Image (cartoon, rainbow, N blue to C red; front, side, top):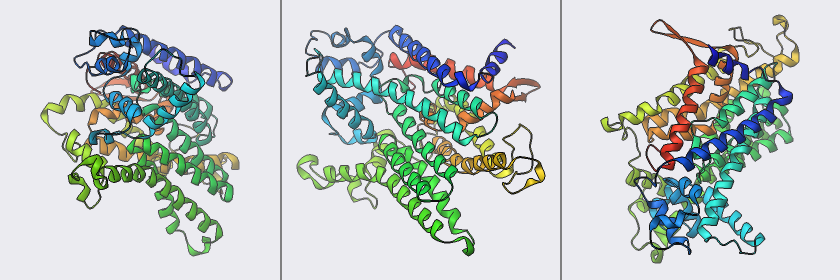
Length: 480
């Protein structure tokens, strides 16, 4: 009962202290995760990060662990995929399997490192790789902070009703406590992806709130450009293109009397935005194709994927090196990983159904009770025009926002290494909104005759999982 009151109490914090409280929570949670990482035992069963730092640290000698003796935190955060990302930032993409990881994060790290070296006149006493790792960790933290702020303001745009401010505070707080945990602090692209995704979502939501016009169309194109950048960080960013595809399909069904200049200019804007998202995925593939399929001096004999109908190095590497593909992960030995992912999958599925009910079933956002759909011109419901308009705009937005999350959930179960859903879900907003609403509504479910508080279960699991994952990650132990 005490835990339930504590969780519900979060929803009663008012807007004037909302964002300030979020920033305090951010600082506390980050400090806690970093302390847990530093206190985690040993170098783990894999010494790759120790060897990497040792190799590039001129002060290290003798043993592999000496290279991180003066950099304990950096050594604890350079685990798993971070090794590939930091090597790529150091000397570019040289080996085929490195193209499984987006170029956006290492490229930005490299640019910021160059700026840092210029400002510091190169006198840091650290190896170039250590500097890049420090820059990458700082970028991850800054990106996560920006993602929190952007999600807060995005929520205020989407939920313009009497409890939108509380939903904004709770959604931002939940993003801080995401089960992605250490992956939002380590040299990974997750936090940068979340920041770019929420930025694109915010711009798209603003375009809806402005209605028609060149200003609204410009925001659509700009959101597409930001989404395109997110694709260079994480390939699943391509799913955000569903926003624009949905709008194009919707406009095809408009009656002829509504076609005109507004429709044509918006359709052009949607096409440009969709093209920007697509280019975010195609440009890195084209660079890899030139390197491995056309430049014989670099790659020797052309690789097998060069002759594919769609010569994508990303799909080849994921399939060949990581065994990613339809139902390939469905083995008995991977059953524990499906169990680890089950809570997040359940949250994503439940929140997607919730958003679909709002978008298509007329679920009221003004209360927790089901009502008939409140349309802008329908005065019979006794709702003020502004409130009706905001309500309808929220439904319209959720109709679109649920699509990328729902498809991500399906792909996680059918194609991906399922356990990564606990971290890649951090860049999708709908499930934060659903859980925030569950906290405010004190939603409960009954299982086998026992009543459970949905928010209490979810938030408990998020915190516990993030802390345990931090210990495992810092100790170079699975899952990753």
